[in-house]
Image (cartoon, rainbow, N blue to C red):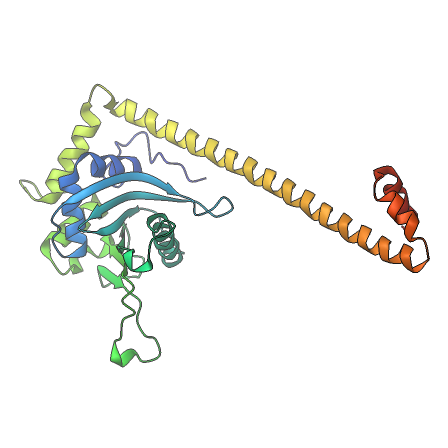
Length: 291
């Protein structure tokens, strides 16, 4: 499993998963501005922020752990900090959106009540290569592309390539992506990036419960917790496999008894089968005799 801790010799910065989540959760105003910069439009208010949100549609499904989930103006927004290269980024976005929909649409709620959803990936590199800093994906008619007919299902995936920060459409997005890519801000700047960096520094300098050493310790604890959760999940899956094996065995036994009944009746031994039906030992002997 990929370690949560980046490097103990280096102070964790904004792109560290734990630092990113804490800064976003503790500073709703900054979270709102980050989302607005990414999406390119203003929000009236961030009404809810949750970090490390785990969603598991059903027991046997792969669970999803979303970095930062926010609700604003009736929209669901997932904000992901993607430091390492992810070859399955598109499929990951698809699963994240489906999990969010499952979590949002409770039993008895109409489909039209599904809120708009946005999955935003801040990628430290450039997953689509050099050039464009922002890619925005929505469901379009692939058969008639010239008509540009959208499905209008309310889903949008935004992929921001920090490695291409110089190509961003707006100065604010360019500065944010540059900060994510390099970890540096312009001296004297009073924009979003300087406030984010101040929030990161305050987090590291919090002597009560979030000094650097404590933060490193918390990262280790989170890593151990993740291992424990993984082990627990493996135990649950093993128990499910055991139960399925028992069920398969029962189904197989039922089929064998059915075949035994047909054979004994055809041999004129129907009464013998009926007597064994109320005697497990006798039934076992009949089954074994037929093998």
